[in-house]
Length: 128
Image (cartoon, rainbow, N blue to C red; front, side):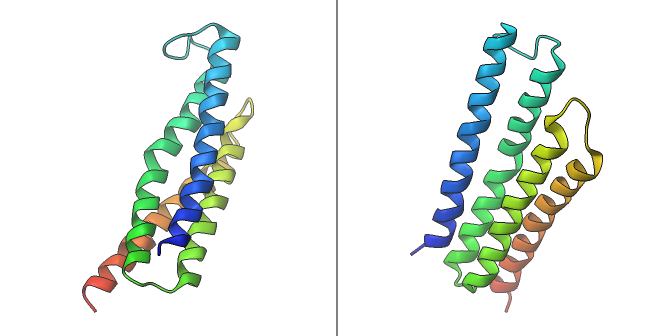
């Protein structure tokens, strides 16, 4: 059973839906069908969505692989919850008119930490 990975996949699936809708609404508001129309707000929404799409799928795959290798549930939840916090903090860092650099950097750093720790966890499982 892959209940833990499934839980986080569902959470992030809903988050992706929210981010996608926010971009679509922004495109409607600014009447931009492609690109960002040189609208700073729309550009931010597109990058939040794009960054999510660039990093979260890999993190979820790594979480799934760890779960399939039998890693302790508490470790999986630790990674999953850290990723949830990371993505929320990342959005906080980009959503306003100005970057909130500590939040943006913190969200990025935590996301990379999850990916790195998960990758190392898989290597540990393979070679132990």
